[in-house]
Image (cartoon, rainbow, N blue to C red; front, side, top):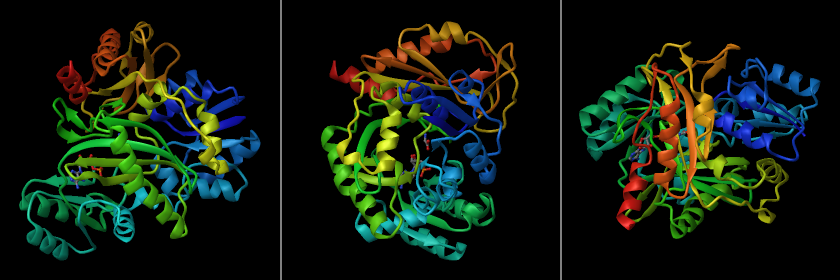
Length: 427
Ligand code: AMP
Ligand code: GLY
């Protein structure tokens, strides 16, 4: 098969790396890709918001399958446009992508189908939102309704913080994404990411993961796209996975189908595991980044076959094999991230780092200038390691990190700390 992957991050590098290992693959392309992805796929310099250009490329190269990595093109209807042009594409339709594209849409779905999630209100004017906060009190969570690159959520400890977040959203900080605001009950517990493949009817659980969103050690400081992740997430026991499937995932899939927009693709549930069980924080409609990197090194089965089974609607007759080892990804970012960063600094030592046992290096934002790799974004590398325990995976990942010569980059040194504390307590 000839396959085109859409995207340019660490998630897309991991997807390309895994697809490149498929016996079903003939040619692999990635648009626009990055310096590291070029090791596994032919990178195509293309504007991915130009759906007509993507369709032309697919026709020209007789592409059999398009795999869309990030949320923005899914919400923008790329899969609908490809399918209308007769090109097979993996990922949800724009209508189904509202599960990530509109937090209010998801909350209403939860209310309609009795899916556990925090109590909430949807608001299009500031006064009503302020009144709701005054009634409920703090802590409380304020969210821009639309896509805001992970920055649209404020966990407000005080009413004043919540009020400020409401004014910011309606003041235009997130553009159109903040024209509506969801105010939501604060949930207490441990977070986990849970992934399923779904063909619109059947759901096949993938592995679990936990990510570290905050930029600073001890999970402090501003939120980022994710500074690291590990899989599996120990909080997701077999029993908790079954409850999540029963109480959250299956009703969502059935509800989406009943409402006339079946969801096909990867459904990523951000969960809070509370004292009373799993609660939905949010849905994403794609693999997580960097969770995908940790998942892909644990997946033993052919990813391509799984994507095809999803599109063919036969997931009830499909299974996947996973490595029982743990995987852990440490993100290396350019100084200044999640704020403004300088591009262009040279990165050395990548080959030496790749020699560490169990390590795979995924590029999130690099370009290859022919002589060396250079930083080309906020998140730049995802150093991923397998290990018999999270501790061993962490040791290997940081061993590789320490071989990388990149003074302009930084990483957190504590990725996996919760899981490692748990492992230590069990010893
Ligand atoms: P989101 O972008 O919706 O994933 O939210 C970003 C982060 O905010 C989540 O990973 C949680 O840590 C936190 N968060 C969001 N909603 C809630 C909630 N209702 N209660 C507690 N924390 C939340
Ligand atoms: N790492 C969180 C996300 O991909 O949304």
